Image (cartoon, rainbow, N blue to C red; front, side, top):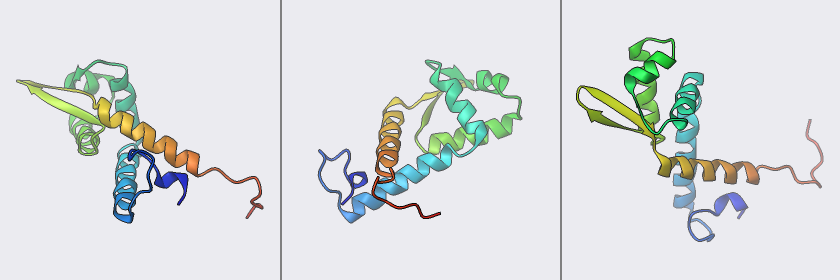
Length: 122
């Protein structure tokens, strides 16, 4: 198996089920990051210890409902986390999943390098 099939499991070969789960998780992270507004939110939150919804809304010139929807997508993917401090909600990067995503993307891109002996296709 390729290097992409090895990660997080003490560098052992992944079972087909583990590989599928890994690919699904990577795709979920990629999908959540696949919108410019979500990337702006992640960039903003990465520079903060935490912040409140209002801080994010003030940073981005879009409707509150739109910010809420983007925050929901990022939270569902596990890239951010939120906590209610009535009447406000504060958000921050989920550092554990952030590191997992970083490692997964690095492994993915490292495994997608063209081999020197490959002839060009196009």
